[in-house]
Length: 329
Image: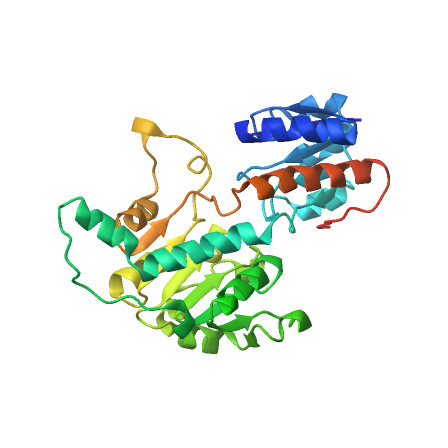
């Protein structure tokens, strides 16, 4: 069996070589993302996996995949909003993701951002560059005295909830599905109560139509003025204009942002002197009370390996007529 991996990053090459040996398949890698310009490269392959930010748009792309004998699109990521599921279904293309790759990888970054913002590490670091070693400003708070609100208590959100609960925090959760295995960890509440009561609010939801721009200015206003907001899910679940406005107006106290609107062409790229065109991102990066990271919450050794492995296994299963472990459609 031959598989073609699109948008392969340098850190994935060694992993794919090992997986090819372990699963006894042939794997080829290309740097470009899947598009209409290169879709015909799939003609000589049985299956594909992708990991990219740009949307897969247009009937012709999905049609050509099917005509070339491809039966699936396996994502090496959790989010699948880049896929037009109606077109995938039209051409009988099964879509999979890797939702269980390593929930702790994202949760640990959420914890790291929370602790860094509580202790104002960015602010103090910038002061020290000016030889300012003073203690002026608000004293830090300790996590065990805080209430943490988790919006989306699925695989990753529940891992975040457990980490904060283990540190002694009260944990609230907003999710239409109330998991019995979290009964000793979270209190399920409505979103307005969560926003008004929480000292830290962390988002762990997919970018569905219902969640598009879910965090708007009205919801930020419901949060405490000194609350920390964390987003390590998808950029589109937050109205970035509203986030910037809420920070500038003091409606919230701080933010940790790992995902943001306009990521394509920015995250995972060294732009050097070229720079980038994203005013909101520039504003957020300049703020002392905001930590911005380039979509690296997933970027751990275990997570990277599992994303490659799980997507490859599901691709093979579909080609062999078996049920995928992580089906989307």
